[in-house]
Length: 76
Image (cartoon, rainbow, N blue to C red; front, side, top):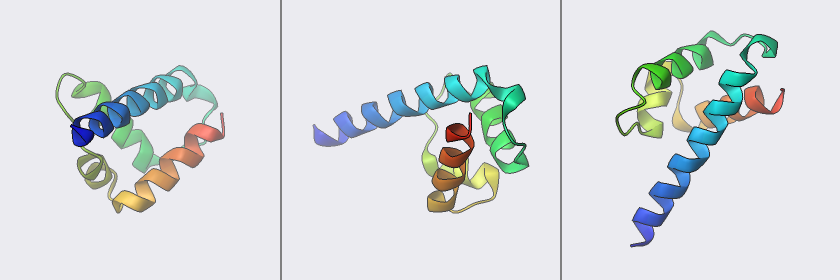
């Protein structure tokens, strides 16, 4: 039950962050790794995408992907 809650929470957070990132895309500093991950999300939004999968697409560890993605989104 707790796993389902955290999965839903993380998915909602990811969707919100991506929506913010996509809306503000022209003003973001260009990080090709994050751009690849955002394109992957846009192309595969219908399926469940894990953090590990996004990090792999970006060529980063999960921890570094989160930090880089967060700093990119916060710079808006």
